[in-house]
Image (cartoon, rainbow, N blue to C red; front, side, top):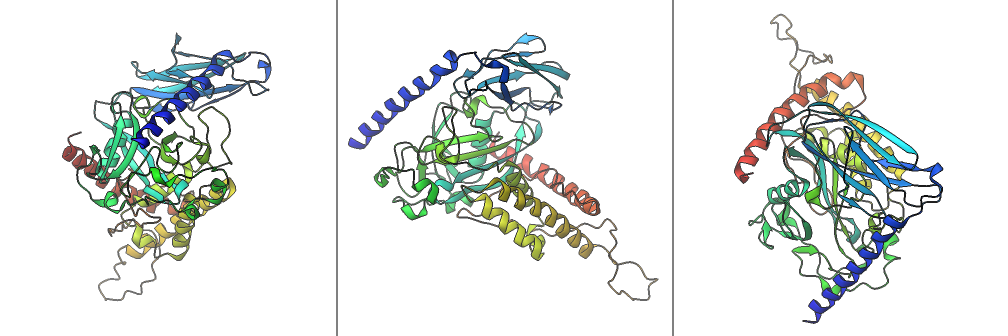
Amino acid sequence: MLKKLKRNLVLLLTAALLIVSVVPAFTASAEGEAGVTVTNTLTDGAVIKSAKKTFFVTARDENGNTVDIAAEFNGKKLSPNWKDSAMTSFTLEFTEEGENTVTVTAGDKTLTYTVTYQKAAPGELIGYATWTVEALTIGYGYIIEPVLFPIYEGENAAQAFDRLLTENGFSYNCTGTTESGFYLSSIGRGGALKKGSSECFGAGEKFAVPEELDENDIPAALAEQIADLDTGWGEGEYTLGEFDYTFMSGWMYTLNNILPNVGFADSFLSDGDVVRVQYTLYGYGMDIGFSMWGGDGYYKTANKDALLTEIAKMNAMPELNELLKNERFAAAYQGAMARALELTAAQDDVTAVNKELTASSAEAIKELENKNQTPPDNGGNGNNNGNNNENNGGQNSGGGSTNSSGNSGNTSGSAKNDLPKTGEEDATAAVTVISLAVFFAAAFAAELKRGRCGK
């Protein structure tokens, strides 16, 4: 009874804070607009296959004040999904194939974007997003490691997330539905909570966060910010959710390295998006480098989207175990995972390990390609000196599961239909060959899974 009362009081306090936080968005002065800075998650020249696309815009004057934002879609005014002190969000709903024009205006600055819509059939595979489920703030690592997961036309991010958890053996609790008002409250082993998987398998079977949190597991930079760690609020070792450990804990998500001001159900994904579902222990997201109110986090955190996507591409390769026999690539992969698992990793370090992972993967792919190519025909005399190192288009057919790191082990959705761009011209042929194999295997696996789960 006492625990329930505490949680209700916390919810009331949180609601009050949120209401207060919205007010500045509508009352910010327009003075000083000459130095307006606008950021937008919409990319000029993008090709979009989803009939809906959510984008997020921030605008600040030279004094850091919020500036009102207006947007038009093919000459017609767009109504915001939500507007607060951090950002304004909009959703494009495409009806015309081909080029579409979006204009965003803040103060005296107007930006124009051209996006091309390619219509897809309902339920059609339209791309892949990189997903992670992370508990770095409590020292647990990845609950679901970086994985490329399919996007289907007509699906929102909540519906995709439901598939991700269910297909990896996790259950969850939420308020709202995957169609509207979805809010993730807890994640647990399969069968532990109401929704998601009713069976415990795969990564879900390995999921076991501590009921009593060891303060030594909390990253040092975060531990310095926590005034009171109440370990008595946990619901058990097989679940992790809101109000576990502190009154400000819970699940949040970032989309392409921003903290959206709308929920999963109001976000629509495109090929190449990066979704990081992250557990915030203290500060309503300030411990993962963001603030619900548009300010800074407790400390600076790196943009890991490119690195996580590269790791996800590696994890999608059936030849990963063979590639890890290359010492340079193995060291690069381990270094990349180490930086990905580091809550406060510096941006320069993240960029460096991503560069090395990309270069070393090209080397390992070429080495594997050469190793598995067919020996030349020497006129039937049986003489094979094994010195032919030219690329004759051979393809490695080895399988094997992906490498596991952190506490959760490897998890997988459907493989990506292309492998990472290495930037090494001499590896292009090898990458192309293996890409085709991964594409056909991925598409087949995705459709089988989709049929099995009734989606």
